[in-house]
Image (cartoon, rainbow, N blue to C red; front, side, top):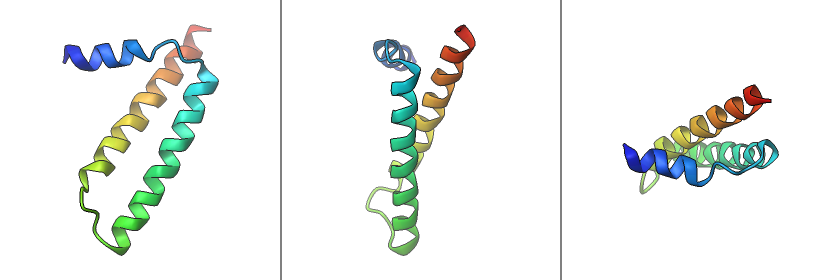
Length: 69
């Protein structure tokens, strides 16, 4: 659990614009993987779960930064 907090704190200096860019890229990647998974199963379907959770983390960090303004 402490490792996850450290990962979040390590990338904390990103600006909201950079976070939104990362979010957009992650959403695009998730959409491509989801489509690809529907057509033919992925070798590692856990990638979808990891991306979904990363998207949630990015959204949380964006909302925290915007609330701090």
